[in-house]
Image (cartoon, rainbow, N blue to C red; front, side, top):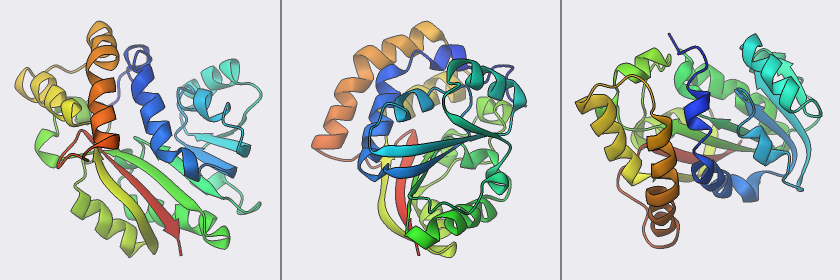
Length: 230
């Protein structure tokens, strides 16, 4: 069972983190783009300011989050439902899904639906999922996560659903250890806004600069994947 607001208040502090995730996907987000699991619009806020996106369609199944999303971003198209409610036309050039796939019991079926929408334009799937099964914890269960992924597992599922993998990397090495310390060792079940803000402003920017420009890490809190529908 997820928390009442899915910890959006605390995660709103992760400004540099969200920008870094977007930067990993920036080059692939053009023309007609679908955002899966838009929540209250923390990623939408960045996407709507990206000029190469000519049409942004957000999808969110939780009606409470939809109401807040509409209040904040009334100019953005929003589908209150799931990927099944998204029309096949126009040609979709990209789907961005950040921390959504782990909530879906049959993730391969979900990936197949993404491919069905992207295949006519050989569009890109931009995917962020939580990583490493060894740090699956009570907060994952509370958030409704069915799993955390390894690169091997995610690669197999993308290939099985007929995607060609362009990029598959671990992301946010210090976040892996922060997650283990807070939620596995100390067994906390919610985020601390002050701690999130401190991590995002002091630790994450330097770590991500090193990951993006020097050396991708062997493990991380998350996995980033970019894949082309075949």
